[in-house]
Length: 298
Length: 270
Image 1 (cartoon, each protein chain N blue to C red):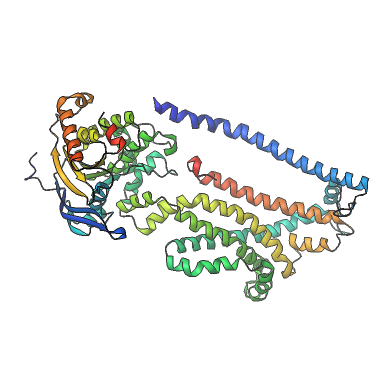
Image 2 (tube, each protein chain N blue to C red):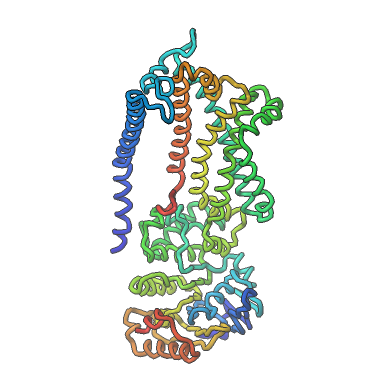
């Protein structure tokens, strides 16, 4: 009967999905990467061999070879220093610490704001414009104030990187707040009516219905927030003058770009990898936590 | 049935409902009494207020006139005491919960222990013939199976009253007739009082002990028809001459109000 048909289809998909899908996806990533490297080198070759100067002059300084960039990882950037990759990994850990703290605090604040706003139309009207407005102020304009106001008040071990984490928080809370609100509002009105027949309290409705319904929305915000927190941490390091993170390294290598461009490129690759790591962790967490009908999964 | 003696499960007196938007009179002067164990269908064309009447009984809609009592209490008190279970046209299952956890939802809210919940869920799965489907997620089930889960969920905490708002309206004819039989067997086992909203005449006659015929604008009761078909009802019940007579009677009552039936309501008579 229809029982067997209803069960076997998703079961089969579940078996085949991870095996074939995983291999295919990994292959796609490799192919795209190789294609990008190929395009870069092809462009470099065409422009240098024809001598074209539009839109910019191509040489080993403006577009270093991919192998030059990768070779740079193994060499010290400054005399008497360990290899660039060792230095960068230390800086990556530092920036990751700021980003994780910013991501965690920002997500909690964002989620809390969403929960608060869904329960009060008045607060929604009153607060939402300011929450949206907060994001129209460029982060570079906020950062110095955070450094001057917040940093001196932080306890010893938090000083410096704590202020950067606050800046990362500022970039993180917004998408989480907005999407949590939307997600909590996405609960099926008929399900809300069902909860009313159980005489469920607001609290029960929140935990048993609204929050589970909101999770796909919350996680798509967390994916945005994961990368935003890395960007926030890197940018936050610039006005704080911190030299311990990737932001400091980028600022530093910027000044030597015309002589040794490969070091900035190498740093950029590491920064991008950090952002991708954050993103992947959130995606994996979502896969483990969210159990929804196929049409509800983004 | 000795209606006069048994205390009423639902008592409606001169109940009216006017929606302020557009001055629509959804219900007017509704008097109705339901004895324990009755299966009462509300039937009428779209807009006759049958769903509103069900929602008024369930305290999901506030009446603008009249009084309602459920189990001798106000409708609001009865809702808070968990005196009724409800099944809507859509199953409204939580897709992040398994079938078993969906059925356990009202039990969790009543604070039942885990083992007690598990035992009851198993019982309910057996009752609606979904044994072994407890660990499935709703989207892995057919529409008819989902609706059976919704019935199991509504009956899990053993409410005296079951409110059903076109529960099989979205299903195909064959599934609907099978679920009609299953619902009757569940009803015979549990002894619930059932209020059943439908716009299928044959479904109403087949299931009910009484059929309440309603007409729209304003929504009111035209007549209440006792259904004296023998019980338990079987597949053959639909072929009996008495069944045909009763269906015709309900159809004529609906027609006499000058209301045209919807195409699917006509089809239900074939």
